[in-house]
Image (cartoon, rainbow, N blue to C red):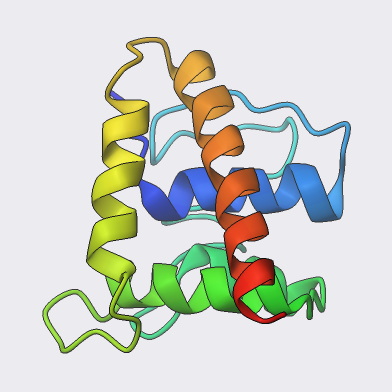
Length: 133
């Protein structure tokens, strides 16, 4: 089945909040072909994780999203997804990843999990912006 993890949910949130507010998300198998919509965070997608960048970073770069809060979230996701074994640049990265997992693990339906993750990232963005003030 489709797994919802930090990078995938954060990328969906980034798309919905900063790229296309009318975006809708469907869940398909990782290697499935579809003629509908734009896939992301899949091996065949234009917007996917690379060896040194998360899907979130790829999307933010492509759409030139330069919001300070988004850049902070991108660094956190990079630490969790790309710099998995290395020393974390952001000391809060592990805590934020654990909090995220706690939020989506409360739901069993993927759409409900996605909705909860959007609320989580809305709050994280507010946190990241207030840190910079």
